[in-house]
Image (cartoon, rainbow, N blue to C red; front, side, top):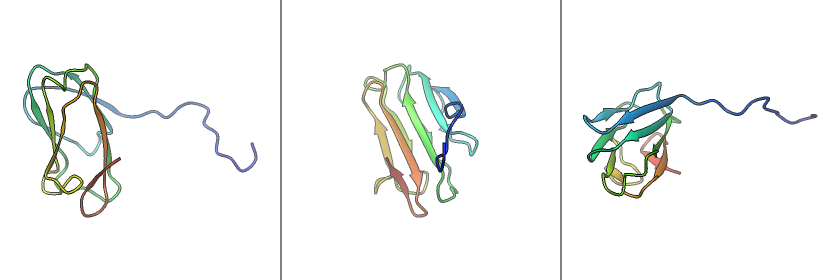
Length: 106
């Protein structure tokens, strides 16, 4: 195909499965964080020293965030103007990207 980029295969992402329990600290190697078990509300901390362009996706893969909320903490940087954002709907997902000053939700 002239002047077009063609994938022979779909995009492959690094999936990190996590479950409720202790606070989870997002790692630089994380990409797609799949919340696979929710038995209690819990918190996820974004990196405290992010690089502009860092992006992470969080997904309630079991549909329990409406019962057991998941709080995503900006860890020193706001998330669209707030210190935290809460996943409170079943199967909720969110993508955050660090813009250099704060995390931006897409």
